[in-house]
Length: 527
Image (cartoon, rainbow, N blue to C red; front, side, top):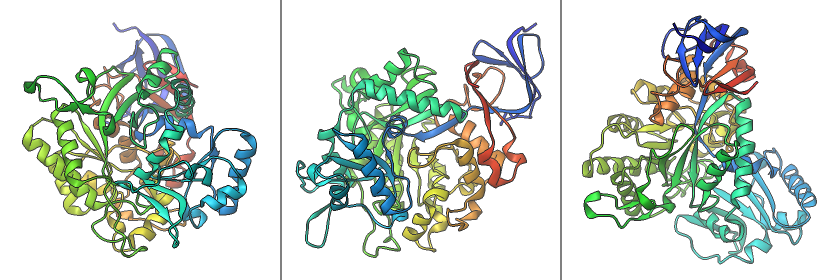
């Protein structure tokens, strides 16, 4: 007879991939029963709802943790934005003045160097766009940069040819020598802050969407920060790390090994354990939809003549993806525009022709503007699209203007992906959006912008489908469905206790459901 360590009772257990239950028993870090059995500790949950722990399939953990110590620029007017910068400058008498989260679609325009010089004269100011795909810096910063042409990026100038302070895409890397790398200690602190926040939201697993290189990485030794946080007991959620493709390099192994590109010692996807492991290689192919830097097959509706651009030479991007595939990596390619999605699908097809691999589950991060033929092709290739439903309520009105009415139906699909038989994960791209999973589930169900516009509502999901995406769907995207993602006997005891079932409340109330407790590996991590 099983004697469990603890028994959760007087609750509704939503298993996600099976019938609901009324009890759940745990032994060690595993689920051992979905019924009442003898246990050393019996926990009466008072009728609460138990769901699998939420899994954010695409977030930026260190970036989010760092942003918690920066000026919050999620405001609606330019005056408020500049006031926030001024306050941050006054509170930071020396060093950099850093803010994050501004959106020109909400404040009316991008801030300029002149704006920053006025509110923080003589200071090094660095403001990060909500998308992460551009930034604005002050004149003292610009004066120290070599403002040459940048492949895959742009130094924006005014009509007189004077830089405005806005740096798009790869041009952001010009600032890196001035601010990077962050110390491991500072990154570990950020990881700690982020993880504590995640536990309050019922998150038990995340995928960190880019470390170690490019404009997304914070240090070439960024993995050490996650290891340090874990050693210090400050890595609070299970974490899978995407490695920026810039960190890969040619390997000097034997020719028969088929490892043309990778990390030293041949380390690749899958290295690690249930708490910290390497995931895919992150390859950026294009930019941002609201920033008008995504690579599109047609011009943006509100900026005729601009169809965005790729972040590198097409053939070189494909070669990188194919080489990573040959080296045993899963690949997660950032592709928002349909032209970028075409490139990635071509690369994945070529990769499988060169080196066939079963059930690889290469990913397309965002899969932002996807035509029906691209959905079908992704399904045929076994690709996992990773869209962010939370974009709709937070930046959906900006996406509407960029796309025009004729292309909204292609944007951030959900229902179409499920109907095509694709794996659908749940993710936030935090800190680009507010990352609370229950708000993400609400966005999947509602599909309504901040202004109240119904955004491609044919793509709506039911609450249970959305819950499955944020749990089992994300686990499948990480090849972890045998261990997490649903509440089944033998799986890890990762779960959240909620005040209500998302399927039992009105869609607009899902985000207000309270997370009462969070458990990882049979241990209460937050309650």
